[in-house]
Length: 148
Image (cartoon, rainbow, N blue to C red; front, side):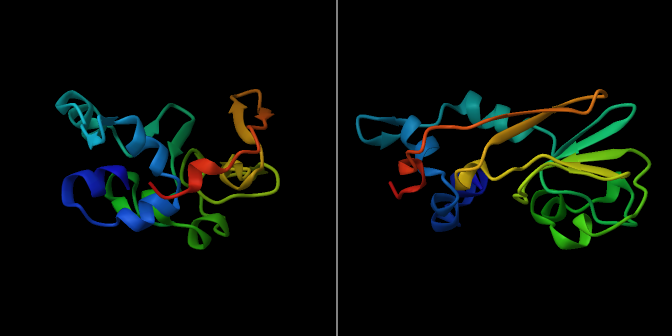
């Protein structure tokens, strides 16, 4: 969302709704937004998923039945139900976030680690292959969700 806003000027309200105000403020100098070109270059170069021998790490998930290299950018960032409820074998375990859950989700084909930190739940990570989960709670201050 940040890159969309920076490069096109679109979707600012959506970005702010999702907590982007803190990031925007971090790039303000004297009241003016200044993103160093090197930061834009770095952020633009990041892949939408990371694949290892046993796992695929992705923000939201994968569309069942679509080869990894043909996955749509939108799905990698936004897919929910079609991925979460699927028992499709992706060939590797998919580790994902994006959809807040009360506790980590562990299935044969996927591991969900979003436990709702943005809504006051814990921030969770998983140690692989041990499948050990670690969670921490942040401060109760939700001012980061406010508009700039």
